[in-house]
Length: 418
Ligand SMILES: [Zn+2]
Image: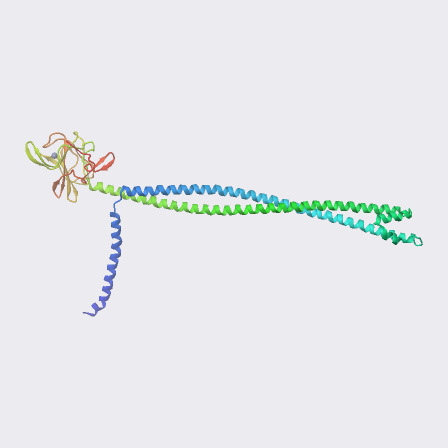
């Protein structure tokens, strides 16, 4: 082995491995695709997806209804919350008013207390003055005023008793009595103010209690709104998922329908088109052995009666091999469809194509007649595979445009035999 071969050998081995691996990588998915494509789509497959879509649509409608209902519930809960907010605000302003009133009463009470203290000061002052005067007036008297003071029930009693001793103190007595009355009046007013204040304190605590209850309700409303919004979010997500699912299902359905239609077209393309209109589907003579004019005869095609001048259609795309006259076929057309398949149409009254023409399936190539060895207007239709005639009236051979649908006339039992 040359040195260059030695050097190249491992490289070649590695390259071979890579190529094989690549081929497998390419071949395997293609193989899968092919088997996928080979899987036939049935009407049941399409129906199943349609049912899934209908179920999914129902789900979407349900989610939408739920979203709508939740939206209404949320709006209601928010309205209730707003009302509670307003009530709490209103009660707060009442609480503030009450607190102001309590403060005002406290000021008034304080005022009365000052007035009372003032009057009591005056009384005390007057009393001291009185005692002083009494001491001076009775300095050398027989009556001991201290004894009198101690034995008196109260100040008024004392004054009254002192007054009995002389009229000098009448003015002071009146003044004192006036002050005592004022103190008593002020006390009564203070008591009344305190009562009012207490009433407002009670009202304030009631208002606070109401506010606390409203605050609890507000919290409930807020919790409810949060819960409803959470539910709404979940319903919206479910709706969105179902909508995505719908789009996927719609695509799946469209793909299936496309595939199904392609399949149908493929089937129809493979089959040969009925050579005349579907109105004419009676067979007057089948393919095979028959007795013709007292002799055994092998009929090479099927005879389809049709009115004079009716269209004769090319059974498939192809090239015209012959379009000519023959004593037994009369005016006839022979078309090669490729794949060693050809068709022949005989006894026509008129040829519309010539040898070498490319024709398409369904193209009018001739008109019905009764030329050649024929009795009555009809098309003698032959199918040849690898040059040998075969029975055209077997399942899977033909396709007929019947009421706008492509159907197999043999499988569908559309043909009549006379
Ligand atoms: Zn015939």
